[in-house]
Length: 215
Image 1 (cartoon, rainbow, N blue to C red):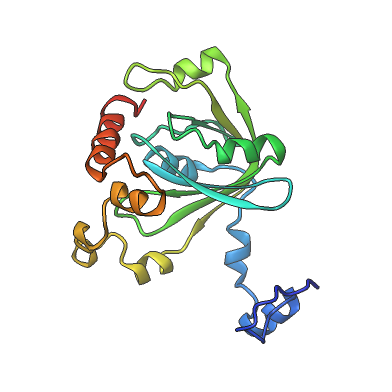
Image 2: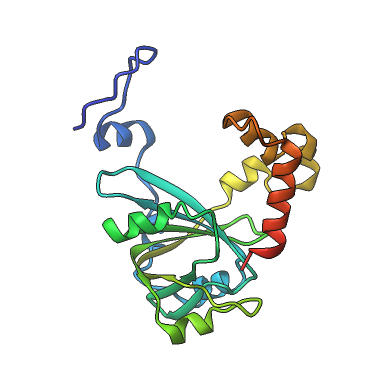
């Protein structure tokens, strides 16, 4: 039993697993049995074709973060049936995921393949490595990463496609025009006071970074 957060606009909270089960019921046997303790050939094939995943981590205080990772399909290495390696490509240096890993270690991964409505969920324990030989194997565009995240898999299972079917994520006919949202430069310019920087200058800086510092 947990203490519900106090939001005056809500009065009816669900605060226990028993309440959840009473409302939502029990999973089917297949849903339980599909959870594997290691990668099988289908998991490995999915990972080999995935150019994108989401990494979920938490710090020692339980504060959570989800971060995207992407590259050419196969950029995540499966060294064996319980070991994955994710290269750390250049980013914005916030290192939220990496800071969480060195203080907590628990990790959740969600792999996606374009056009495929199923996803692959993997949970495990993570560590940060910098072995030179491994970094060389992870090189892309002639550049090796400085670090990589090694994940020891404890759970792996395929997620059914209901969420992607409801969202119609891969249906281009449902995609909004890019102009429906401002550019990243415009949004950041609105969010962060930068009186001496124009939106155009920010746009140009971002484009230069995409050209020169993806790897």
